[in-house]
Image (cartoon, rainbow, N blue to C red; front, side, top):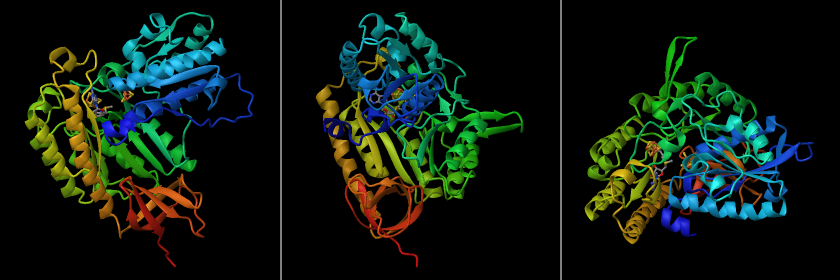
Length: 476
Ligand code: SAM
Ligand code: SF4
Ligand code: F3S
């Protein structure tokens, strides 16, 4: 697949859009049906679940089939040009569906809606409604407006919207793992990044509402939550009732205390903000996964400065050393960009050697894509030819493949506690689960009476590049 070749591991951001499974009753008497397809990061997928909840409150049911829908929604991503091209292609396909079913409405949600505002509605007439990430509460009135043929646009960004009071409806869920948004927006002006413009200012969600959501998830059988934010370490909430400041470390602890049977993950940490307090909290609780996603973006201090990442190569390496000191067995992943403005072969070499030093378990790698309106677009020339960006990307992908295979091989002949998530895609007689390091494990069900959501010790006897293969450890 071209995307895999060029972008390395498929990241949340480059995940292809998926038609969500409707959780709503197929036979229920819904007023209308919507179809939603989501692109981009986990936060967008979590937002689609908030949208589903809002629409459900208006009497809408979901459908897996776009041609059955009265309302098609596409929750979009602007992070790289390619992400936007994919959405445009999909919109033209939806447009031809609408020709066959004229009453159908097509709506664009998410970051591309925020970036392009009314352009796709007015100039290109590709959609009927445009709704930015902070305006989903206005969806019902916008749908009404669009139904009467009016232009329905709301792209206002908010300083305090967190949708904290809306219980998301889990859509494409295995019933075991769920995303929980703990904050929105981003205040870090990384020069390459469009997110601060599409998602607005950073704001943290009420800790109590996060805990209520997590408790409800646990009570309904979920056994893993991933706390989501663009920069989770700057989470900050003042609990006025108890006169207490809740930092990310405190939130993590509170979520972990919901139950020892609940696995807790989080993403994304910024190297400048992750604290020892967070690392010690991970060390204290068995159910907080020993795994940190610590995007570096470049191994060159000069490029990092142009990127406005506010740390140097040495600072980053010191952070990684600190993580390994406090959490010796911690899994580590990263994001890396090749071919950022002015990147020399020497800078590229520094990214390469940094990866050799860190030996990431997982890396999401991209070549630089200039985004309109970002600091880099305004200040620097996008001067690295595309073939150079891609060649450098291939070089770091090749290096990372060696590290990720080594990481998988290190787990062979060891036993891991695995959370069972579902049947294996290839066979109903095998389970699909994950280790604390987020590695997929496939193992035969045998005659054990297990269910998804259960934990089981699995001995790993072999591996492929992306999967551990094992056998249940018989405890009797
Ligand atoms: N907030 C996280 C962080 O600070 O790393 C994630 C931000 S973004 C949603 C995910 C990744 O996309 C980034 O870490 C970066 O590697 C990549 N990315 C962002 N803007 C990009 C661009 N203009 N071109 C290529 N990759 C980009
Ligand atoms: Fe973008 Fe930087 Fe914010 Fe991450 S921290 S979302 S890369 S601006
Ligand atoms: Fe994409 Fe927006 Fe997420 S630009 S990566 S969907 S915050």
